[in-house]
Structure formats: C-alpha cells, structure tokens
Length: 172
Image 1 (cartoon, rainbow, N blue to C red):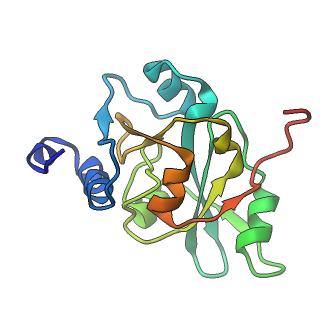
Image 2: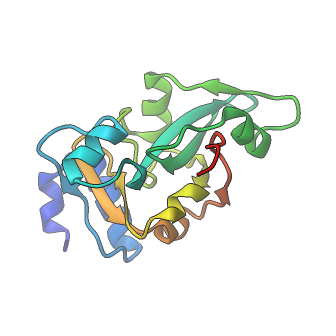
C-alpha cells in the first residue's frame, strides 16, 4: 500500500494502515465482505482456526481510568484476575469497559479494535498462547477490516509484553 489507496478505507482502517506502513509491516489491512465483530466470524470469513484470531479485549483500570488492552487468542478466555495482578496497583480492580469507553479511549468500535493506532495509548498485554500459531489475524480498526501478522509482530508493533493472561485450559 503506497498511501493513495488509504482514502477509500474507513477512517479507523486508514489509521491502522498508516501505522503498519510506518512500521514496515508487510501486510496491509484487507476489508472482508461481511462484518467480523466476533473472533468466530473473523475466523470463518478467513477460513482459519479460531485461535489464529488475535482478539482485542479492553478493560478499564479504575485507579487512573486507563484502557487496558489484552490481545488474546480467539479460542481463549481472558482471566481478569491475572490481568489485574499485572496492571493494577495492589488492592485495585479492573472494571468493565462499555462501548462508549472503548470508543473514547481507542478510537474504534467494539468488534473493530485494532492492536495499534489507538486514540490514547492503552496499557497492553499480549497473550502468550498466540505463539502456538505461525500466522494470526487482527482487527484493523473496523468490523470489516483485518490484517495478517505473526505473533512476534505484535511485540514489534505495540511494544507490549507477552504474558499469561488466559484462563487455564486443563491440558492444552
């Protein structure tokens, strides 16, 4: 993508595409025919495993009202207590992030929250279970937008640490 194509994309996807381009990421966002608001919808549309979807879950840190972004594998559930232990001061708890909070802090609607190009930089954690896969896909700033990457690309693009943030799988 050289830049001229960006003007035909939704605003959120344009922001993501610019960040990917600026950071030398080899894969530009693509627009799916149907919305992929859930990890399962995205996996079905792309013909990949549910776990290959890097879903973005946003929490609200109560101590400073910061957005906490957890990028996790689509087939995993986030363990809120593990995340809380990693990002909250002792005794503080995470809160739920409603649609208005997510939009205000990230600049994206739920179902299109990208790992990059946020309105305000979130506290970010990357699920180590994403490393089970060579290739993954993440939202690109719109419910129809996605982009391809490798788990290690998430570290490069976000600067976020890898962490154990999911519920125990019991044998996985």
